[in-house]
Each structure stands twice: as structure tokens, then as C-alpha cells.
Length: 367
Image (cartoon, rainbow, N blue to C red; front, top):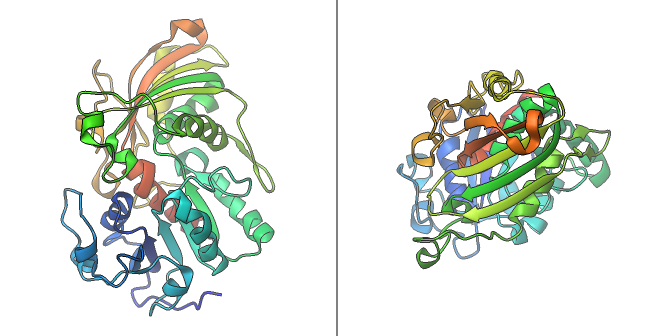
């Protein structure tokens, strides 16, 4: 079991595994000087272990590498190495790819650490919380059944696929107010969603790639789990069907998804825009990574746009809101139809920032 020690800063000690990659860099950027969490360890692959972070990481963000981590020596991305740190971490923020997450993340949970994962491997597990806090923070309570069933004192909490974050956020208030019958979506996904180095330039320049492996299945299945109901030991998925087309486009950051939604009760486009604009979440209110307004509805006919809107929001929460625009009737569904566009920052809300907000709510709930 994890040898529990108290951080001298009285913050919760955390570590990042997969720290040199694109999402790992976002974790470092957003966790530096965080009021609740303190980075005490950075994990990386065997080829980077033992190197200083500044020497191992190809930093791709616009900001500089934070001074606090520049000279941090990378250790192995495993529970044994992390447990031997002077202050062992309680939370692990995982930016590992699926093939590594499969075996590594459960080992941390077995050692008493809580893993906030961006990998997809465990997202659809019956006892694994898949969470966007404003949408389904209650699902974090599933961690209790997970611990009992798996016999560990830590846990795994999954962040959703980056493409799902905008659609799921917009659907929550519509589902509460009107009910949902079915959803049809088309994504235009930024190249950073493929990690670094992403999509080869000769494939994406002057082009749209109309296939992203397993992406459409993730959008369809994860949306239903996110909007489902919490049971004693699993989630009862929402029953409305979701159909997705996913495309990669030549944008650096920010996933746009067009939405056509058939509601269960009649509503106008003005009604839909109003409930999305008024949507709030009391559980996330005041948390460092939580935007004051989870959904920003824009009235201009040509918004949202990734370059102009992906960093909407203020302070630490910049990039966390879902931006919605072009809310209008959907003639395919008559009086029950509405269509609109969502934009979400894929490496902030859809990855590192979303996982950090999950951890903030986890702490607030006393889990």
C-alpha cells in the first residue's frame, strides 16, 4: 500500500505520467501553481527516465516550461517508483496511450493512488466513472463500488474522449429541459487531437481526412454513458441513439462538432439557446478549473471559430467552456428539432483540464 506522507505545502501531492507528451505538457502547464495540487513527480518512458525534464521533453506549447519542473528528473511511470518519492503522490494524472494505460493504471490504483486517466481503455468499464463534472459529477460516486469490486484503495476515473466534451455539455441542459430522442453529429477535429507529432503535413495540408480510427464509436457510446443514470454499481446508459461522422481538419487546437438534435418535447431554437446559456453546475462553482459559464452561446452567424473562441473563459479556466453557436431549427425533425455548432478546446477541456476538474470535484466530494 501507498506510504502516506503529508506534503509540506499542505497541498495534495500529485504526479503526471506520460509527462513529456502533448497532454502531459498541458497537465504541467495547468497544475503549476494550482491552489489544491502540488506536482511531486513526473513519469516518462524508459528512454527518458533519469533525464531532466527540459532535456527530455520537446515542448510544444506557447508558454515556457515552468521553472519548477525544468530540472525535475524523470522517473519510471510505475507505482513502485512513484511510491518511493520523498512525498508520494495521492493522485496520478495519466497522459499514457492505451497500450500502456491498460497495465500501468490499475497498478497505481492497487497501490492506493487515484488515477485520473485520459486513455480510452477503461472508459466503458461498468464500474469506471466517465466524467465531465458539469454533465454527470454524480457518477464519481461509482468509485466506491469500483474499490469494493476490485479490492483496491485507489481508483481510476476517466476523462471523456476530447470530441465528446462539447456535444455532451450542450446536450445536458437540453436533455433535462426537453428530453432527447436522437442525435446526429459531424466533427471537424484539430490535429493536436492526434498527439505529437500528430498528422503528417502531407496528409493534412490542403486536405480533410474523413476517418479517425475508433473515434465515431467513442462519440456514440461515451455520450450515452455520460448522460446515463448512476446505479448501485454501474451506469445505465441513455437510450437515445447517437450517430457520428468524424473528420480531421487542418486546425491546431479546438474541435468543432455540428449537432442535429431531435427533442422529446416541442421547443424553439430560442428555447434551446436559453437553456444552454442559463446552464450552471453548483458542484463545480468556484473550483479553480471550472468556468463560471460552462456553455457560452454566441449569437453571431459565423461563430464559434477555433482561432477566436477556443480559449474562451477567464484565468485558469480559459479553454474550459463549451462554445455554442448557430442555434436554429432543424427541419428534419419539425417542431422537435434544433441544430447548432459546438466548439471545445481538445487538449484543455477535452484532456488535461477536464481531468484536473474531475480531481477538484473528487476532493470536494470527499472521495
